Length: 239
Image (cartoon, rainbow, N blue to C red; front, side, top):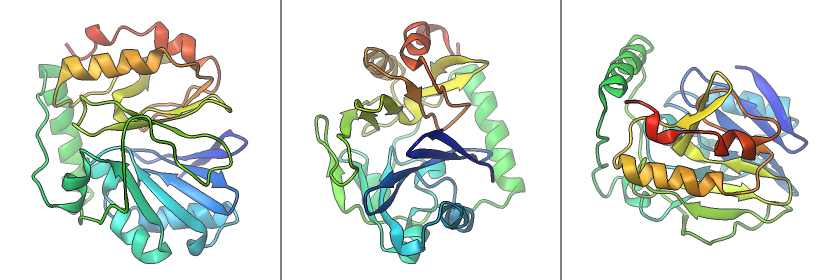
């Protein structure tokens, strides 16, 4: 898998579905999302390429509960001992103590979902194993141990408990699946449980001062991300 540097302390590990991001911490590394089940070996290999050992993975932040984000979390926890952080309202779905709400698909989204599911079947992607959540995150929380402030934003709509992480000092935003990119544009991520709520969350993220946008789906925006976000028209996406 391709490992590319986004900022001096952030790297993207690209997967066919659901990129993950490493963040260098003062005492190791953090990981944003974990891709689909079966991705742990590639993630641990990337950690080695960054000069880290399994025990150097300190935190795993799950932006939400979907299979391409929490899919390999339990395997990585078993291999590294990392703590898992996730939005409070998605924590029951990640733990497996409540059923995950299903998205409401537009026609284009339905076609894309069928295509992705066919790809999962061909690749023999297994159902995800649930994982304990060590820290439940809420809007306005900060995450410690990153060497700079990390602001947690509750951005519901894609799932009830979706979160984004904003690092204002370095101008980095991890939006989760509220934002994707395509052909140099920021677009609304598909497969939302509440489309209007997701659009409102997108607009909230577009109001931030952001230089680099680290999306799970699409290419990262390495500079001028605020302008890209504010030029977006999420109301017109996937219709």
